[in-house]
Amino acid sequence: MTMMIPFDEADARLDWLALTDAMAKGHTFPKAQIKDVFLYEGDNTLLNRSAWIDGLGLAVKCATVFPGNTKVGKPAVGGAVNLFSGIDGALEAIIDFHLVTKWKTAADSLLAARRLARPDSRNILIVGAGTVAQSLYQAYSAGFPDAKFTIWNRSPERAAAFAADHPGMVVADDLETAVAAADIVTCATMSIDPVISGAWLRPGQHIDLIGAYRPDMREVDDQALIKSRIFVDSRETTLGHIGELKIPLEAGVISETDVIADYYEPDRFIRQNDDEITLFKNGGGAHLDLMTSRHILDVWKAK
Image 1 (tube, one colour):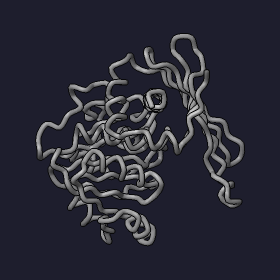
Image 2: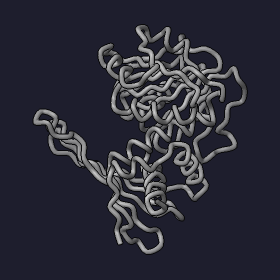
Image 3: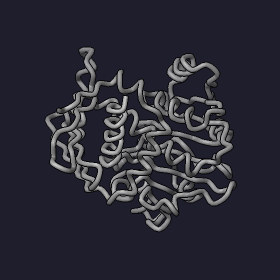
């Protein structure tokens, strides 16, 4: 029987630390087969992201992006994740697209922070006050319960509105000052040009980059990469596809050997000392959607 898993009911049952543990376990299985397919008509897009992991099953995350919907009060993005059995190919669950995306994206970053950020990190800066910022706040609050949060956004009004919904959060007026003061910087913007300069970074920080997803997008400059030990969730889905690394790699600023590890290399995916700067590129990927969907279904069945 195929289960239909809606957003609100499932969202209330999930736990950030448990999901990061599930992601870590997911990377002990054989490497995923991954394929993305895009179809376009004018400004509209159909995206299918597929993954197959021996032992976890198969998932197809289907999304439609119709930007014009916002003009008539409709959501611009819709979709669902189809989760299939790896044993007989049966459709096990249809899961709300936004549920999987929310939990996958922030848990991806939290898993890296649990391995790379200093455990005594207390000051966390969120750069960008969009939809992803909310899930980042939830995830990092679970991973670093004693931390204090600061928010910065290009529009101070949006930052102030975000902070008003989160008691104790501080709004940063100056990004350079806020970055320098932070132990963890988590950046989720739609920027094409870097918003964070390596000159602002100091020893011991952890930098979490989420926003850039196209070949022309970046959130940090070359100096930030040069000063940091670089990690990614997946070499296959980041190095040749996302501008954050693709551009400096092609320019010879860094080489592929400068990327220390991805999640399939857990023994190397560690902080070596309190002074180094660690930098993580969250690239997403259909394999993470599959791991997240499988965990959601397990939780749904259990409760």
